[in-house]
Length: 261
Ligand SMILES: Nc1ncnc2c1ncn2[C@@H]1O[C@H](COP(=O)(O)OP(=O)(O)OP(=O)(O)O)[C@@H](O)[C@H]1O
Image (cartoon, rainbow, N blue to C red):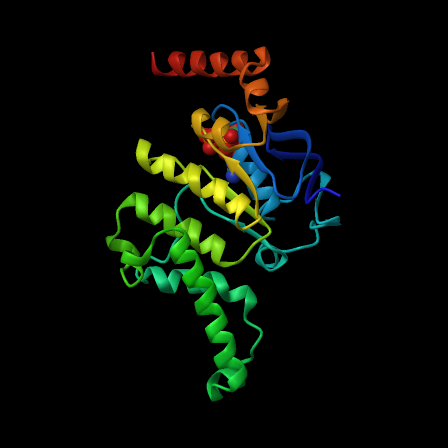
């Protein structure tokens, strides 16, 4: 059974069909990339999986069960974490505090036991701290742990956002443009982390990304979309060389050229 099944999903915004009869499966342990020109429907697909949007048609199953009856806040407890294109962290909180927020889904203690600081709460607190230390080590964030997000460079914030999602200890991680705005060196780090997230942590990754070099170096499979429709699905080199994909990108750049002309 696939970890995630997108089954004939359609979503319309007024007259625009943002996602048009899209079907694909993501297998456990895979790095799966969604690519396509601007407006292809990639972010909308992430928002459908995160339950921010309801499909007009189709089903989305995680671990064999439909998630269409879940509210957005019930998605992280299922084991699905995500990052956002426009980083969504608490600016006036430290790196450590932001990572602790990610642990919320694992808190099983109630308010009274927290107030009384029972042995159970103490053990749980240690478990949360240990999980976070693991993420800090993994992403090399030691130097920033007590720093406020507001004062951090963009590249570090992006890493913290990935850390917040990893702190949830998800089974499925959705990365929305992890390399956008990053330097070549920082993008190289993202490539190493994605590989390790898969190999060391055993987490399945779906990534929306425009950087085709990153996509082809880390992805097992790639789905190319254009105008909400599936164009091509396969290994990175197969999709990159698919004439339908090349045509869609050329078409999109022609349109941009016309707009900017
Ligand atoms: N909330 C919304 N209301 C109306 N239309 C929307 C909304 N969100 C997306 N769309 C439209 O749906 C289509 C798909 O948009 P989407 O943001 O999913 O594309 P994308 O592939 O993520 O693009 P980009 O690479 O620019 O982020 C576009 O035509 C977009 O204008």
